[in-house]
Length: 74
Image (cartoon, helix red, strand yellow):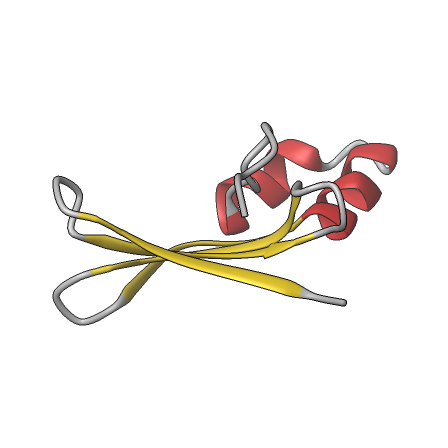
């Protein structure tokens, strides 16, 4: 079962959307900054891991950002 979490950070005026695995780790993450919902992060853990294996993780991170590393409370 896929779990999605959405939260708003007042100070940064940003919405965070996380897709979590069964252990609560983010496998996909989107960060949208208001106003206008500008995408700051649109990362996939699987895509980042593939880029890392291919030696292009810095390139991936510069375009898509990273997913959250610690587990997120459900």
